[in-house]
Figure (cartoon, rainbow, N blue to C red):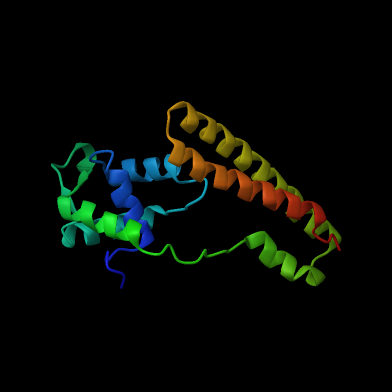
Length: 171
């Protein structure tokens, strides 16, 4: 285990908690808003990591709110663990593209299936790129150069996917 003792999902949660105490639902919304264009987290990951972070002393639980929602706040040791995580090597990308996987088995597809696959993927990447561009523009306006830079990565990714979809074999 790295020095920080946390995985990237836990680190992302600690990073988000630097903004202030949040419930699991609020953390999911913040993750989707701030990280969603380039980093995915599931609700189950968030709710699995929060008790672990609490047990490690990296977050503390606040008073339960409406509908038993439980706010979490980052502790000083959580901030130190997050700082250690930031200083560790980032590791390798985990590339998992469901469209590329299906294209790898293109010989088993009909031409119509492939075209439908490409059309759906193109629509998705066009919409996601437009959203990431808008978010990057807003981040720049807000003076968040680092958030804007991360969002520009998402823009470039979707742009690359769209370029690849134009040249992928159609059967």
